[in-house]
Length: 174
Length: 158
Image 1 (cartoon, each protein chain N blue to C red):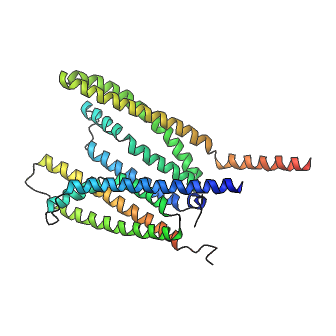
Image 2: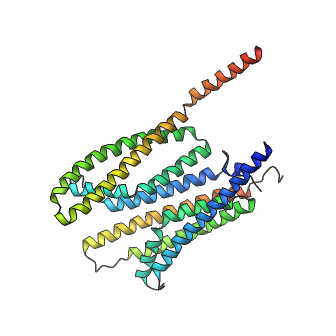
Image 3: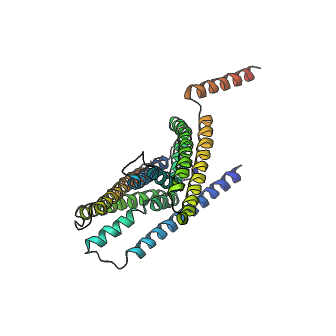
């Protein structure tokens, strides 16, 4: 029987399986979202409102996929991948926040066009979407910063290791 | 120290077993919903095949997560690695074959539909095909990885 450490250890092929699982989920969700918002009509306020709402509705599967990518990177010890993912998280958070600002303006514009009976329901959906997107952007910032801090560049990690070795040597000499 | 390590290993195995059970439940839930929606079975009908396979391929997300969790529980033994690999490759071939059937059926869509409805249907079938193909090849890749690890000689075997 293999130990749990070897199943989930840094040399386990399970990281590869997690990468594949995350990629399958990501592409599947992207295809679903792409098919729902195609064809793009950026100048239409209704299209923008609907697209952001649909994207917010897909937040949970995208978060699961993100966690799978992170777990795979940590399991495989791919420092460069985690670092790139961290930077991407910060970038995505900025894009989402900019999108939320635009979405709020679009919601205010669309509010005037809607009949009274459907207005309340549309506003409730819009608030739900804003809450989901803000939560995702906070998650992205926290994860991005933590991952970037936790994975210093290889040169920094090497110099830290060298310092550790020199400190140990001087302690032994004393 | 040793007892603590053994305890953590037992805890790890317990966690893997729980993951496998949760994975099996997720798969069973998805498949039971799918079977319920596709009853009564009319395999000779092209419309039924397109609708049912389309519905199955929209369940890719819970199925992928379920299979990942299930494989966590299966790979505690060498035999488990091999078994998970064979199941993964078998499922991949099944999914890819079903994707081919879906592509063939959805390629001959009902021409009586209006242009807009037709376009929407074609877009939806293209999305489903992308999902199915990615799912199939993902399963194949994961199956190969599991099988390779299961067949790799370990120091203890030499």
